[in-house]
Image (tube, rainbow, N blue to C red; front, top):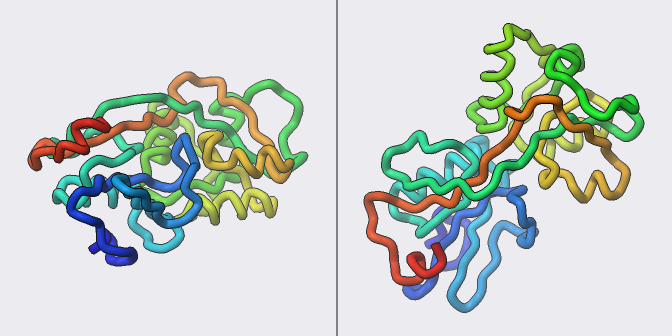
Length: 209
């Protein structure tokens, strides 16, 4: 049975990979994609309130996935986390809503009406840490559970968000949104490849990892 109970059975010789929505490579536009020996299980954040990355980490720790792409840090000792890339976070607004400055400071951003992903969320924790350390109180006007809904709200002009470019590259390319860098090297998201420390990896998982 699929880890979420929403898809077809995984064959004994298959490799199950947990991939949250809006990873670096957005090759899978459905909930899951199957091939002969590789199965991608992709959580859609708009379906359930549990954050995709944390949900996949739980499934991995339970031995129900072979490996997973996770955004959150190594908080669970049952998982082996390998950082593979850091993505810069960008300030995002509707088309024409940002001025022509090259980047925004964290103080500038705190004055804007912000729409943020609900906690727990890796990006939200990064923002909270940086703002707290700098004694900045941001103007958060709403929290949104799903990245897709957050992007739609920004496009509608309801506020601004802070997201990685991969979460909205199609909308940026279409001119629906615009984005600016943040003048702080700490506004990044780390992408990890994770495996279980408890369950022995299958031969297929060892080969891929």
